[in-house]
Amino acid sequence: MIEIRLHGRGGQGAVKAAEILAKAAFYDGKIVQSFPFFGVERRGAPVQAFTRISDDPIRVHSYIYEPDVLIVLDPTLVGAEGIDIIEGIKDNGKIVINSTKDPSDFEFHNKNGVQVYTVDATAIALKFHLGSASAPIVNTAIVGAIAKVTGLVSIDAVKKAIIDTIPRYKEENAAAAEDTFNNVK
Amino acid sequence: MKKVVINGDFAASYGALSAEVKFIAAYPITPQTLVVEKLSELVSDGELKASFVKVESEHSAMAACMGAEAAGVRSFTATSSQGLLLMSEVLHWSARARLPIVMSNVNRAVGPGWSIWADDTDSISQRDTGWMQVYVENNQEVYDAILMGYKISEDPGILLPTMVNLDAFFLSHTSEIVEMIDTEDVRKFLPPYDPKYKLDVNDPHAFGALTSPEYYYEFTVKIHKAMIKAKRKIQEVGKEFGDKFGRYYDMTEAYKTEDADIILVTHGTIAGTAKETVDRLRAEGKKVGNLKIRYLRPFPDEQVYEHLKNAKKIVVVDRSISYGKEGAFYSETKASLFDYNLFVPTYGMIAGLGGRDVSIQTIREIVKTAEDNEPNKIFFIGEKK
Image (cartoon, rainbow over all chains, first blue to last red; front, side):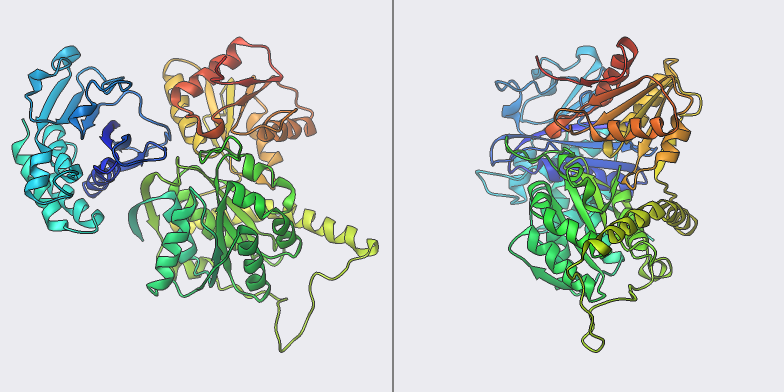
């Protein structure tokens, strides 16, 4: 079973990203589960969401404390006060960050085998006019990067999941995922 | 059959859709809101041919369902927490009137402190209303329990309502794969509701009249006897459901209990996490098992005894507490064992109150607490000192 934890800010679509990821894995024939951190979400406040992907039935119903994969939708969450983004990450885990920086700019890159990958999902979201310039919705873009980096889901399944899940601008969102799939570092 | 990835609230809505309910009255409350939203969407899209009545409270929602059901119309509603408590008066009434309504209740804490998170206090406090209570582990079971619920409730020998209880957020807002059954196949399992006695202008009857001491006692005993009879029916329906659709259900589900020294007794989502933990503990050489209790009412005394009789320690997990005593599942389990003259060390574990996460680590702590302590009392798992 692979456990994925997503960190974002209210309005960026972290919860939907977790759901798209789960649906994509489901279309690829996996057993899945996804859920938000159960809070009272507000725009701009830190949020978490979770996805489990498995070949066997998923019986556990609790938060994810030791993720195999970590997704960061907002670069300002890295090092933010009161949030330990990388808490519990497994050795040899993978971290995908929406950032213009290089992976080596992050101190936890290459520590205990943890690999950091970066993609400018914000720029890609803006390129496809997802959300507004001040509040881009980066969730679909980041899922494309996850598909590439982890190999957990196929890009075709991701695009299908986006089209089935996102109510508007379906094609643009699917195109954003494909763009990051091809551009993650 | 069609597989979809949906949250537990939607699974409840689709359960009502597949059961082809004809009447819905509901009032939204977090975290049940999505049930009502999906149902109103299904009705307005014409996918579900039912009357949807918006009401001003949960009390009215249940009262409206009672009216429809009394007229012989299959009815559904959903609620949670304070909403269920507001319904309390009509919960008693609907059961005593022998109206086989099915309702999903999202188990949520009651205030204050104001909380929208998982806790069983709401439904446990309604234990003695005459409603059958089933606690489910995952979204598939939400959907299946609603279909089976109507079949059991509507049986002419039972005619008692069913409350399908699902954990707030851990199911209501968690997306999982749910296999939906084709309507034609559901119809072969669950025929249309056609009660012998109903409100009918062409054949007038009155229901719920003043009942003197000469009759009230017998009315009450009949309800009890019907509830006891439901135990067999729950098993039969669970088997028939399995034969037809491949998923078998019973009043309890034993997991690796046969040779277990320590048996966990759990319900709801905690049962799934407990089974996962059992496998990990067994890999470390500990003989642990899990008994999932699905029904609190009627309570499966016989099965509880059968599965627990060889255990060295019995560890019951409750996500609520009866102040001044202990958790309800702990009390019920002990009472079953006492009835069979079985005296085994027991432990009552209070965990996960108000949505506190019950993880694999929590279950490990529960098992360790039972290993390290004297029995026959309750423990507060994860309590901050």
